[in-house]
Length: 420
Image 1 (cartoon, helix red, strand yellow):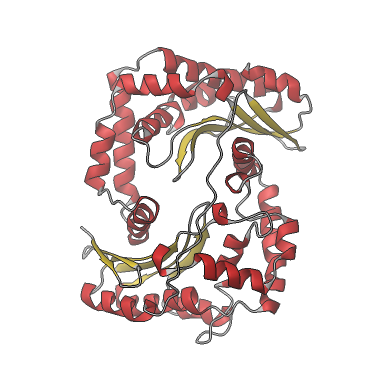
Image 2 (cartoon, rainbow, N blue to C red):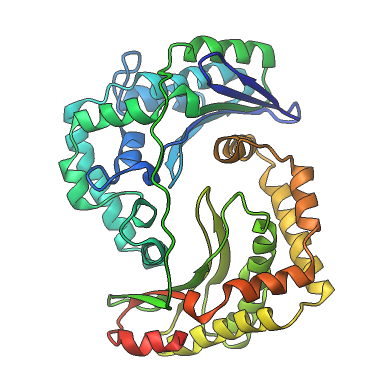
């Protein structure tokens, strides 16, 4: 059960009560992420997130901000994605008022001090260096860059060293003014709290929020006629790669078929690729297949880390599974296992107050439509074996394949030939 309230300034409040917990989460999420950036300010969405922890008038520095919730054992953080940024605090129920005060304070009243911006540039550049030194993560960024190229959907969320160094206070002020609006912001509270009081407190704290119409993001351009490869040479101990295809966005009726397909391929430890590539062949410690859907883009990708000498064999094994799913209808028992896994995983993932807040706020922000847990499970249940085969046939075509690789390889042409 949940309650949605829309204020006169357009702010949406989502209340998700649960008396069977002793926790409460307050989450403020805004429809502004790296897809809303341009070449000049690439990385600013994530940088703004960092700056909101640097001080307000009420809590003048990072220590004051962090101590507020540390003193009550709270858990707090923020996150930036391609399409939204969120700030949350999770505390014991008796500290619900404090959590709301803290979230609203950093969200609405951060000072964005010029000196702090300059110091934080070094912090974020080191964060970027950490990602670049973590191929299991960085290869996914390379894959998205391969799919979308030189447009916001293909840029890294954290930005580049060049773009980060050039950002000034005015860039932050303008970005917040143009993108942080009551019209694209949701405040969601989940857990054990007094609903009427919480709703009134949110109204009072957010009543003066900027309500101008937020700027829209650029539409993603999808264009591919031939298989593509991005090879990044790096002296690693294993080769990391992503092999996948463009797929469907959040508004497509096929996203549940897509999720079932990804689960069958590599969604768990009994999936086809996990058993064949890891358990039977011993080629990888990790291998997984995931479906990613946003408002105007989507893809399905298999990622793995393998010995350098086994790259060609691993890619061939994955392509064979793609082909088999496109040509043969799966058994009802395998379909049922995948659907039951997705439903069970969804149920377990929503046990905590912070997960519930993200579940409801994310749907409302991105699609303006809420599906309950029961309704989500019903959508999964409707997927048929023939639909999985037809979708695989639709997306797993030679001209649609994309392969991103990090490892000590130099012959890009030979690797591209694996896809042909």
